Image (tube, rainbow, N blue to C red; front, side):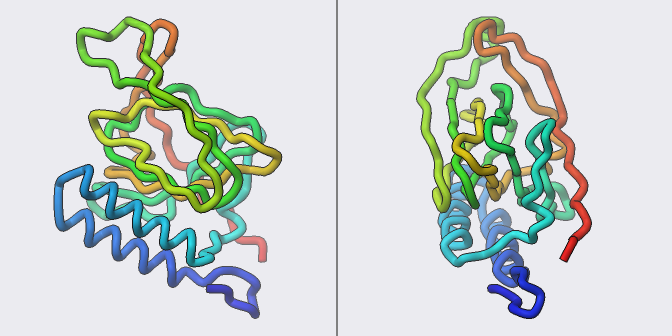
Length: 199
């Protein structure tokens, strides 16, 4: 909903979405069931016309940004606004949990890979396909057994996604891969501080 006086979205739709996701996560441990149900709810949120606060759509010249929208008190799941300038991309990486991503604006090019097993480490990654996701589309980006990809912002405008993960994605230890060699480096993405509102 839009608050006409302030010219910004009220948070009601996001709060309802967060409450719904909390119920889903507490009802089952089946990642495939969770991601499908969360994907349905994220599709509805994007179709509702919900608007992110303007300060959470700001880009950086240096890299994509991860703004926290909600982190469960026990770190069991979170919601993030992920913002790229056109042309920015991630390395090939894992999530080490389940995740659902919806495109709020712009377009995202995803390249997916088979997650290496312990005996496949140190060998080139196997690509499994590419997809361009556009405004309003939602994808199950990962489950624990299938969570290796890279993404790039394509087109002439920033790409903004609303992502839901089965953990605190800003604090999880995750893998970055060299797809040509399979070499792994561990990293923690962290969170970007929410900028002050300017309206």
